[in-house]
Image (cartoon, rainbow, N blue to C red):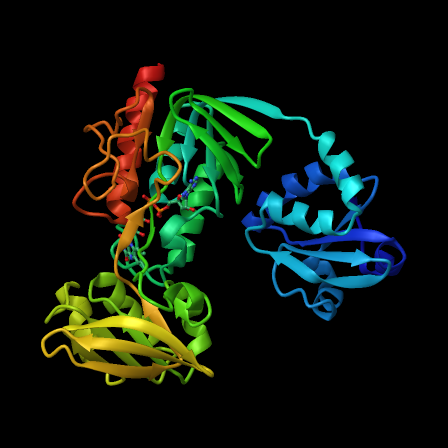
Length: 422
Ligand SMILES: Cc1cc2nc3c(=O)[nH]c(=O)nc-3n(C[C@H](O)[C@H](O)[C@H](O)COP(=O)(O)OP(=O)(O)OC[C@H]3O[C@@H](n4cnc5c(N)ncnc54)[C@H](O)[C@@H]3O)c2cc1C
């Protein structure tokens, strides 16, 4: 992989024909995640497209001129012209391929793809999901010298990475930003030697055979599998939600609250997530209305007290949203008073939905015994109904879903597996 400096940019990139340029930084986990994908694709597409990389910190001025704001960022050029599509953050191999394919004639793409050789690798343990549960299992297994691979469809961290502040994880006197806590957990496990394959497409999961295919061509076999795929936010399932998802309706305050500086926001929900995230959004928004179906919040008392003391937050208890409609820059949330059945309209700049979570089990739900809410049933050692397959963290059937309980599950599964494999 050729590394270039700003002095070489003109010759290597502008006069270089078809070029993909990776702006990377050091101490950058997403850069480490994309590097092997970039390397592998350069072998496949290298005869048609030139692959080069540039150290962002040393070439800041040029990076800024080209609109690069974070690392890694991939830029694509065709005969001196920068193409509109850029990729950054947790970049998937399939995203790079889509862009490279769009730069070449279809016939040539076919030829290139026919050269792709499947890869098979073997590990003792394969962990699906790099949230607190999976990362802890990876740490314990690695420290037991068990050859372990961690696979995640996103970057490591799970739901903690998008939680603005964590104040109940033991060992820290002050509340920790969620991204820092998950970064530290991830680096600890990686440093120990667990292999990471993150921001990948999980193409196929065969729990019985203990095989997982990623990015369509790489098969990973293992003696044991740990499912640590966690949960994703529930949708309301009402009119207008799907259309406005990501376009005014959000499920992540850490990700999107910053876009609502001085604006009016509706928050839906009444549990800990809704109450704590509303408080966080209030650092940006000028007015927040919480809509909750019951006559009281279910969040803990401390969070509620903070919320009630916040002058910009008001609450509509015993109300439920019925639909969302866009009106210019605004979103109209139609809400029903559950007592009087009266329908009214709330106008806001954005809506945040925090109404609980659902387990991420789509790819294997027919294979495992689940509880009636769809969570994976396990025994006390975290074994599922399939021999050699364990499950840990929020995805399993249990009463309390917290970082500490996910970490505990990961610990138990790893120790049980270590004993079995010994
Ligand atoms: C807004 C919010 C605030 C929270 N605040 C707190 C708090 O203050 N304190 C606390 O203790 N807990 C908090 N929690 C709960 C806490 O985040 C979870 O209990 C914890 O993250 C569970 O860890 P996990 O490893 O089981 O799953 P997750 O953190 O959900 O991680 C699962 C991982 O699996 C990956 N994945 C999903 N599907 C697949 C697949 N098919 N293949 C491979 N990988 C996959 C995901 O990308 C993700 O990285 C909060 C949760 C939310 C949503």
